[in-house]
Amino acid sequence: MWTSRGCSLLLLLLLLWFFLGNVAHSCPALCQCYGNVTVFCAEEGLVDVPEGIPANATQLFFVETSLGSIRSGAFANISAPHLRKLVFLGSPLSSLSEAAFAGLTSLQELDISSSLLTALSRESFQGLAGLSTLSLTFSPLETLEEGIFRNTPALRTLHLQGNRIRALLPSIFHPVRGLETLSLAQNGLASLAGRAFALVPHLQVLRLSDNNISSLPAEVFLPLPDLRELFLDGNALAMLPTGVFSQQSHLRRLHLQHNALQGLRTAIFSSLANLTFLHLDSNRLKELPEGLFEGTPHLVELSMAHNQLETLREGLFATLPRLTILSLSHNRLHRLTAGLFQGLPALARLQLDHNNLSGLPQDLLANLSGLEALDLSHNRLATLPEGIFDSNFALFYVALGRNPWACDCHLGYLADWLLYADPLVNAQALCRSPADLQGLTLPAVRREQLACPRRPPGPSRCRTEAQEPPEEEASPLTQCAYQDAEGGLQVTCDPEACHHLRLTLPPGDGGVPGAGQRFSGNWTLDNGCGRLRVEVSVTIEKETPLAGPASMETP
Figure 1 (cartoon, rainbow, N blue to C red):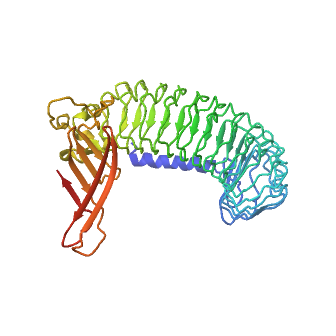
Figure 2: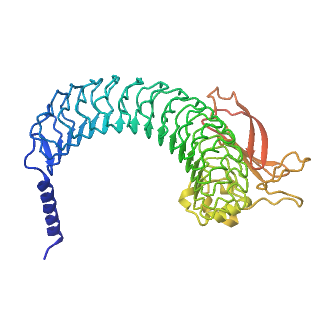
């Protein structure tokens, strides 16, 4: 009867038999051959192309060898007529001689990565008429000579990312007119000629990410009507010229993040009827023009995070019925209109975190029946209006952390909703007031703890109501908790007066003991109740100077 140890030993022997049985018995020195079709040469002692490559080999890899150059005709004497793929990875190649790959008539893919190549001969790729994929990446390659691709007319994919190419000759891609994918990312390109891509009209994927491009000629993409994906992220673009995307009706992905865009023209995306993904994050956008997305009805994902947006026009997203993901995080939004998100029936994820929101309209999320995730963290919210989630039947994730929540009677609706939510999601959602609940997490607050101070009989208004106060009222204050952005000042007021002030003084200046400490400041505080102006002047006389921040409370 076999024991578990015996079974494990048998399994190990079977695995060894499998791997050893697939290692070819005839293999070049310093190399390993698997199934006589894949050859790995990964020894530092290898300084030349070895002899004895199996005749039926289809893939040949040189990984971190000592190959410093490929001499002319280095592969001419090997008997591998079926070799399809040749890779040099991490070898110190510094030169490729003319006809370096002569004899590899069946080669379809050539990859030279992390080499020491700074230039290439125009005849280096002689004899590679059937090559379809060429990768020359992450090397100190600075220039591409005119005619360098004249021996590779069948190229469909060309990867040149991670080099030091600073300019492109307009004729560099002759005669590879059938090129479909081109990557020039992570180079030193500062500009593009207007006809830079005129010789590759069938291009579908163009990657220009992480260069130093500061402007685009209006006609640069006109010869590329088949373009599906365009990556312009990580550059220094401050504006986009009118009509720059006018011929890209098939474009599906457009990456413009991590640039210096300060504004967008109204019709800049009007020709992109099939656009699905649009990334505008990490720019300097302060506002978005009306009708910006009218020409992109198929948009599924839109990101505008890490900009400087303060307000958004109502109806801005009304023409995006397929939009599923919308990110507006890390902006300066302080107010949202009730109908801002109308017309988004497919919206599933909405990110509003890291803004300056102090209140939300009750109908902000109405009709978003497909909404599943909502991030409201890192704002200035003290409460949420009752019924705000009543239309969001699929909503299961709401992030509320890092807001100055006022845990009183006006938070009852939210407390009830959180009974069915994951408490870990809001472990950082803490009560800022009242004092007896300060520091308690929202999921831990019991409904009976949410109370408001008793007020004299008479008309009153809940701070979550949206109607305007009568003209004779100087302020819409009810039972409200105000706080500045740094949390150093907190004020609690009711309709009659402000009764509670909490002030954290900055550290003392280390002056002479007994000289006293003086502090004055003024704030304009906003929340769902309205605006409050606070001026404070404090003088403290002590025998010794204050050591660190002082905290005081005034009833």
